[in-house]
Image 1 (cartoon, rainbow, N blue to C red):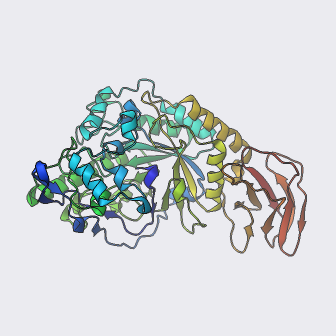
Image 2: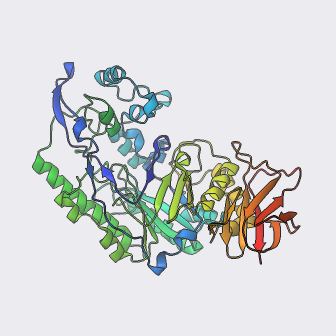
Length: 513
């Protein structure tokens, strides 16, 4: 994960992977024989559709009413204030363009022929273009002495968050704990400091559910087999080279025997690291597997038998919540980034994850979104039976910036008044509905007046709740003075105060008899 410029929705059905090692040789002018990506083999493997029902374990039933959580994306990329992982991948400035604005084949050919695979990329403006090897070299400068996860989690608790998810390992492959598997983790750097343990300990201290993010795609471990040209370029254009760890065209093809041996090594590596996370830290409430690329093991390959399985995950942590992004199925539906916000009430468990910064999951100095913007998304998510997982990216020192703490403090102040409308609530059950986003909890119906952020506020003089239940009273959360209302054939009409002014969402509490 993740890229704000290319979000997606993952449904618990099928997950595709693309075999980056599948290549062909062709002549390419002065460069001689290089390896290119044959289009027929791009994104052409799938995991089989499986029949899976979400967990019914009692320890997992906290999830649908959790409401609000904190995502923490952090790693060695913070050394140079880069996004996690993706800066090392060439060609994203081509492959991430919307379909209606793609570059011409001639334009792409010129970029490929020139060998400047970042041509036109935003990284050229700030000199942040980086090769995989240069990216990984940041590990030696990663030394966050001021990191104290308790401060993150206390701020999350104060902001009304009930769970937190920490990036134990992103696609770049740097494991934030002293893993016995591989040589790119805190065992080899930072004198074996265990950030996962510190995070878990902080969550338990403040009573938050513990979530760990783990990327099965590991671009470091897979470095000699992976293509560091974004796969979408080879999908859309011909003659695209396969790039190595220095972003140079590869000139040798791995044999089938070498690839199969690597598949097995990758499978064992993934299983070993996941088992460490699920056995070394006590009870883990959630495992947030990510999707990008999925492990480079073709579907149906025998090596999958050696990889971590859903059954093994459940054996190690019976009450765990599992994301749908590794196996192609899981316990909830995942929506990523503002642009992929759900458009309807979700029947099953659901989560919307997004950034608190206007762009980027890691710390990149991007400005913060307004608190009004964040809270508008939160209340709308809850009105759709969806949790919101809001990301904050610590700096290279391992701290949140003053702007991040300001954001969290403003959310905390709002939640102090309005938390009842977010936690342990659900969407309105038919035939009830409202003319504004709304949630329900026992005898209460909460109607949200969106803040004026991006024209989302409710400017109407009234709001309506269609319900057959008798009404006891109507108030604004945080205010004891009743609001004027009237009933009309199963319709509750609430008159909004004239001249009302609010910079954050307001919540009307309709209490039923």
